[in-house]
Image (tube, rainbow, N blue to C red):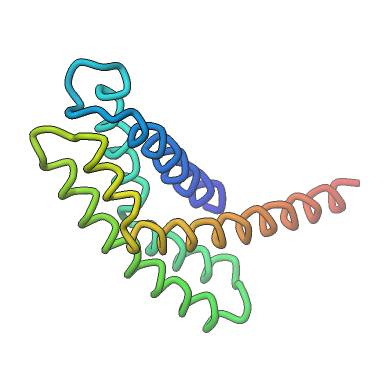
Length: 143
């Protein structure tokens, strides 16, 4: 489950990196260019990654008995709000007939997306530490 969370965080981070580059291209539409063809793919992957992310995190807290559980649960509530707000913005962009660089630049500037990314950076770091700790435990048991 930790790997699932890490993969979802990575998908959103990759999308954001792509969106930064897309915004800089000055494209009037997503039609007719290679990156224009990819922008909807990246956004759709981000939607899939964010959908249910908080629920998976809540399950991991229980399954891994992460402590202090109340602190983890409080953060998951923040993550859930930020993910839902970001999903609303991303899905609005996806609903547009044309996705310009300016539209993506405005999405990138959204405080909701920025808050979500900060949440994911924090979560990603915690997950990497948890995976590393789990790997060390497995290694020492196997020796």
